Image 1 (cartoon, rainbow, N blue to C red):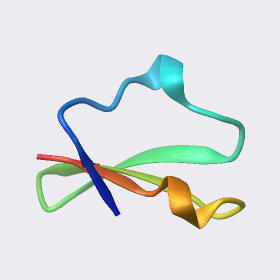
Image 2: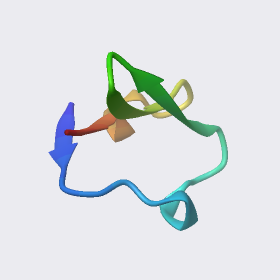
Image 3: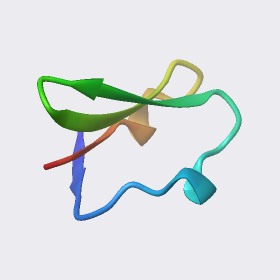
Image 4: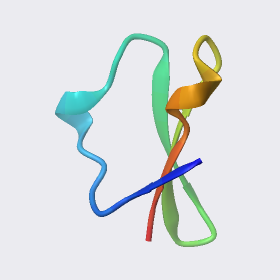
Length: 40
């Protein structure tokens, strides 16, 4: 999982979701799991 300084909505690809988990922003993508990222 990549740790990014900021995850922006405009950078989302099709199939991606931004989810808040334990106070952190997490980007998940079931089609391309390599795109997982966390902010914070």
